[in-house]
Image (cartoon, rainbow, N blue to C red; front, side, top):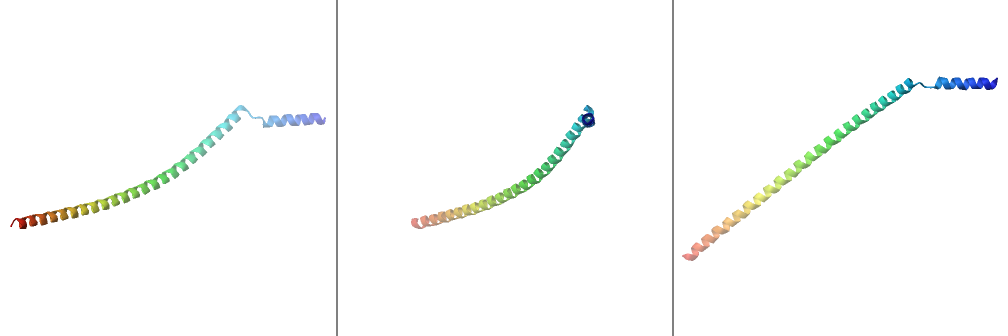
Length: 106
C-alpha cells in the first residue's frame, strides 16, 4: 500500500510539473524578449556614455586646436617683427654705405 501510494504521488508530481510545448515556447519567448529589452537598455546606456565621452573629447580637441592656433599666431607675429627689424637694419646699413661712398668720392 505504501509503495502504491508513493508511486501515485511521484507520478502525479511529475504530471503536475510537466510542461507542454506551448508553455515552454512562451517561456522561451518571454526570456528572449526580456534578454532583448535588457540588451537594448544596456546599449542605450553605453551609447549615452559614449556620446558624453565623445563630446568631452571633442571639446578638449577644439580647446587644444585653438591653443595651438594662438601659439602659431604669436610665433608668426614674432617672426614678422624680427624680419622687419632685420630689413630696417639692412636698409640703415645700406644708407650708411651710400653716404660713406659719396663722402669718399669728394
